[in-house]
Length: 219
Image (tube, rainbow, N blue to C red):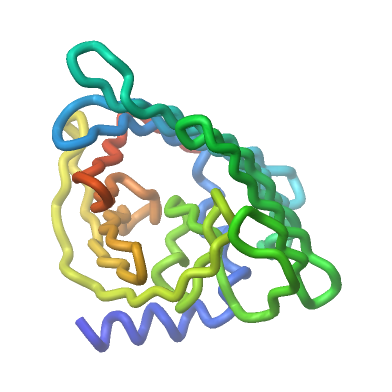
């Protein structure tokens, strides 16, 4: 497992240069479950230009109900923009976390990023990725920036296993990774052929599962 993870790390040293590995992706649709009960959805749309630039739009909505009464409601919209070299140019998001407004804005300025958000405001120069788990390279970095609040988060990644994972009757040969940090505990399943995210489990105030409902690939 250690050797495998070292190989993955070595071939992805430039953490911004591999968005093109996902050029086959057009759309991902997930259903969100909390403790086994349906809570909402997460959609990810990929808009590729002919030159290889990419715009990714994330939409998330979910809620927690008890006896038909909504106890918690969450919605978020985020947009990622990458240039033709796969480098992040710009990111912005707005989130309503049960009535609390949160935001994150990241913009490339020469060789540094201007970051402004609910939890961080300043320049950032260290290698990082946004906490967009569709991007397989999230398992190769030591730092992620929250796409909700711009909170800077150190992370430790461990390769767990290879697993045949069935989604809607289709079998995916996946690699499973564990990602942990302060207030961070999640596992992700990536298809080995397409590097597509097919499943995610997030442990935070319950067990949250992101189950792939449907997807579209570019021909």
